[in-house]
Length: 156
Image (cartoon, rainbow, N blue to C red; front, side, top):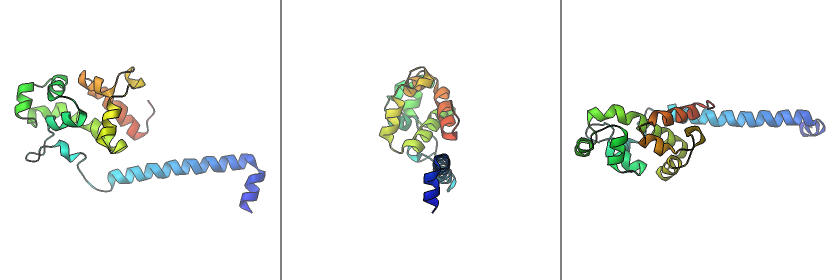
């Protein structure tokens, strides 16, 4: 009987369909939130040095598919020093926004190869540049802002 009523009232059917789509979107959003908050965990633990727990610049560079020298230059780190000690305490502040970008992308895409593809795809909110170009041009915060907004559902 409910189906018959909806079929006779196209406006009501449209509203019900709209509400079902909205509900489906909210359910997906809730699932994503629950995945993020269900357990305390370290995202991308493979990017950390096992002995110190600090972010490892070489592992970050490998994950991104770039040479350590390029990443070091972009982050204003001394290449020789970071090559000798890729998880140096002095490098952590520079590595944090880059790792956070990778964490958000990992949450979205799951696979490192898809993360790298996104990093190498021109983005309109970056004036047509790729996220990787922006990171390597010492502007990881611009990429991070876009990703944090997307993760929060904030339109750009």
